[in-house]
Image (cartoon, rainbow, N blue to C red; front, side, top):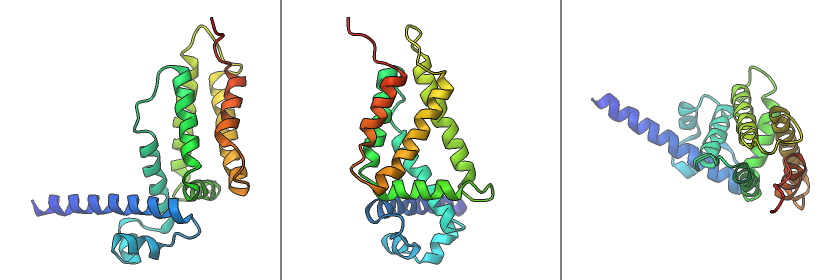
Length: 193
């Protein structure tokens, strides 16, 4: 029985570490978020962090998974217009957490290496995102998007990822506005009756 209690405490501590790391990275940025700083916020040593996560890369990969869970907690809208608005809301939220955007962008480059701890995370996340976009815009049988749903999802994902880099270099870049304009071109709004 004690084993279950220890396991539950370990799971709770791991979640606390992830939430704290997400907060530290969101506020201080990826480059300023050391294991030592995250450990101090949680009240453990950097070695204790590595007890729960084998490496800094594994910790940061799990931070991104935690961020995704926060972003995806709302039910996925079935109406294409609502799905578009929800996606743009996530992009708008990203402008409030530049450190997390930087973490995502840097880890995505490192994860090109199949041996990197985040490689599978990015493969899975990309597939889920494309499926979500394609499914939302494929439901409206009265109107069809300019491109096939999978191609449209890839274009939207590529532009969103690229805009994040442009935005990190120049914070005046209007990521949500540009994505909304692109989606309006790829999937024009229904004509007003």
